[in-house]
Image (cartoon, rainbow, N blue to C red; front, side):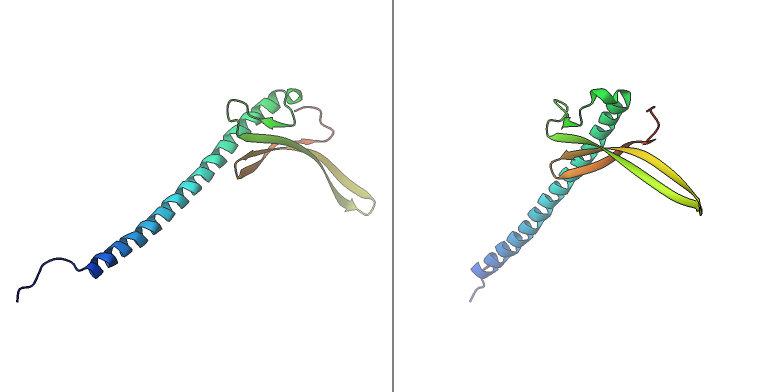
Length: 130
């Protein structure tokens, strides 16, 4: 009786199943890495666009709308400028109190699922200079 060389059907099916499982795991990891890379790119883009809008705002704050997009630079990204007034008070002695009033300007930039809040300007509320 001679032995035949080769693989049986069961061995071949088992090998294909193992390759399929390994292939699915590799594909899932690849797609996950692509998704994470896209989020990182979107966040970096948001920071760059926020810095650009900050420069425009500091140069001439009256000409920058409170919200909008970045036009042809990146039509998928949007921004919003928020202004907050903050008051801090501290009692120095029983009959004296120190009060600080600040205006905080921050820029919120969104692109896809990425969102950053970028502080643009902190100034004294009584200060008229930029």
